[in-house]
Image (tube, rainbow, N blue to C red):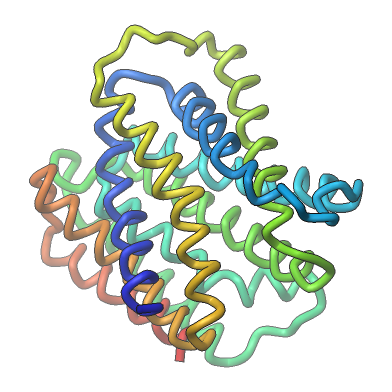
Length: 277
C-alpha cells in the first residue's frame, strides 16, 4: 500500500506539469501560484489543529525560510513552463535530487564521489535536453534555464527541510511555508498586475488539482507512506515523477522528445537513480 501511495503521488506530480502548462495560456505565473497556494494553505490548516508546535514562533520562522526557497522553486518552474515543454520541465526539475548533496556541501556536508557522478550524468543530460531539439518541438533554452534554477531552489528547500525537520514536527511546518509562498505570489501578481478571474474552467481545474492533490494531498500521502516504507524505497518510487511528466506530456499534449533529447532524459534519470540506491 505504501508503494502504491508513493506511486500515486509521483503520478499526480507528473500530471501537473501538463495542467500548469495549459493554464499558463490564460493566466500569469504569479497569479496561478497565488491561487494554488492560497487554496493549498487553507487545506493544510487541519495539520495545525491540536499540535502544540504549531504555536511556536520558531516554526513560523522556519516556515518563512522554507517558504522562500519553495516560492523560488515553484515560481521558476512555472515561469519556465511558459517557454519549455512539460516533458523537459519534469525531467530537469528532477535534477533537484542530484543537487541535494551538492547544496548540502554549503552546510558542511561533503558530497560523495557518487554525488559528483550523478551531477555529471544529469548535467550532461540537461545539456542534451536543452540543445537537442528545434524551437518547435524542443522548447526554448530560456525555459530550460529557468527550470534548472528551479531545481537548485528545490534542492535548497530539501536541505533546509531536512535540517528543520530534525528539530520538530514537520507537519507543523506545512501550512506556514505554503502560506508564505501564497503571500509572495500574491505580491508578485499585484506587481505584474496579473490578477484576474476572466479565465476558463480549465484553469480552475488546474488550480484545484495542483492545490488539493499535488500539494496538500501529495504531502499527506508521502507522510502516511513514510511511516510504512523505508527511506530507500520512498526515494526510488518518488524518482519516477520525471517519467510520469514525460508520459503525460506525450499523451495529453502530443509533446515529442527528439532522439538526442531522449538520450538526455535517460542521462538525467540515470543521475537521479544513482543517488537513490
